[in-house]
Length: 359
Image (cartoon, rainbow, N blue to C red; front, side):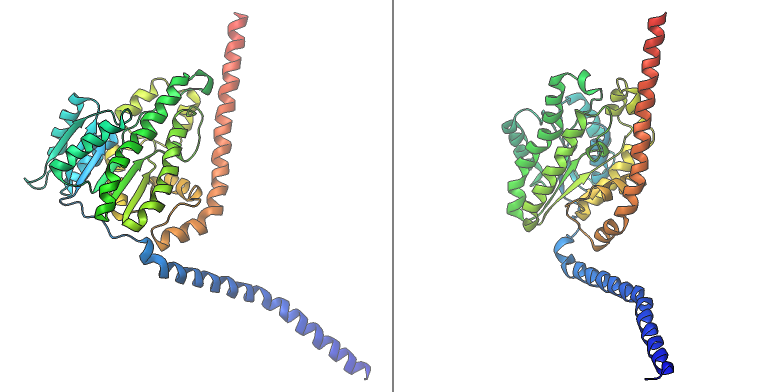
């Protein structure tokens, strides 16, 4: 072989080798595109199994615990506007009577009824079961249960009384377990139903001052995921709502003793109105969506914390996959700012103590 032929052969080999590397990015892009298409087709094939039919509220029986004020009352009003029959459950009889009057103003026909039951849903399961039975005898089987009874407390871990930790779990967790346990058998027999748990954004992320409150709201997430897996074959769908700070009497009471750090962190997200929260929650529950979030921050938190949570649409699953990395990056900046707030407050407090000692 001549030197010219050898050079030509080497050049040809080099070009073919480099052309392969030039094509490699396009090949990888095609593989990724094929994977995405295959994934979308797979989700499309299984979507009939995970997309429930919307619940019709007109004529449905909706039970709302914690329904005498705040978000619970607004949820009852929103359901009543769609023709539902309402059972309000709360401890304070006077507040229940006032709430009933407000809900009744939202009627769309003269057949609708608002029933009030005074009971503490966190104390005695047998009593809760008994009043739910009474409600079903008067207004029919429960089509949707809204677990909205809850309370909040904020404070530094070592300053919160031990009994308050127990109280949080009783009201915020067991106060949702008992009513759910009371309606689930009938729902399974009827092969239909909706169950909503009203958690909190503090049930998605642990924040300064919420060492007693956050765990009780996190617990609802675990209950909801396990319950959804059990109930799905019976056409019963669970929704967990994660509202941000909402302008309610409970929120106003909580603010009286809220640590400065907690206030400053909470202010980064703003305050919602209960009517806004109610509309979104009811819509998601009717659709059978597992997660109900509020605003850009709520959407990001739900995507970040989705984990092994159920999905009810192809879009939801794809959005979580695509946005996870970006949202985690943004979240790191949020966490950094929260840590900065805590450090500044600690330094300020130490300087104040030092000044007091000098005086």
